[in-house]
Image 1 (cartoon, rainbow, N blue to C red):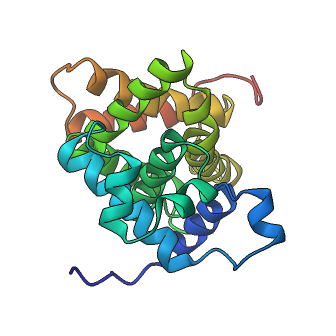
Image 2 (cartoon, helix red, strand yellow):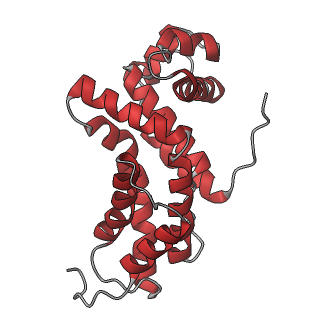
Length: 221
């Protein structure tokens, strides 16, 4: 078994946001034993591992229960649906492998994170993300669940870093931080999604630099 790595302060902070976002059934709060962090982590790890290795068809609740050693009844108590569990598992993995520094200089933090994002999405993380998005569309016809459980959390962190850079002057672009974040990560996702070539370190650096450059727009435009 792989030994868990020590987590940085940034990872701990972002893991706290993850924990706050995770669903816990209201009845479970009112009665019975408290939710076990170790068991919850085992379920999330098993869900992600199965999704990455055998795909969503193999990542059934039964398989996740067998892999994690946590009963199906307990898993359903904590997650109303398999899709919500898979999204939370994806969020946990992203938090661990793609920490976004909230203390480094903002532009440097986004540069480093965007490059790691590109690298990660070209492997298992990217395959799992696309599979989860596909299941969202198949089950609900939209990606609202993915946005609520994953994207809104990660996007809020990135926007906060960009705003900090705008306040200290290290990011000169005056457009809203939301627009800057979406320009960087939307471009990366689009190019990865459709397999366009040239998404490398030089491209990411140029993209972030161009996005953060002085745009001449009035503040708040």
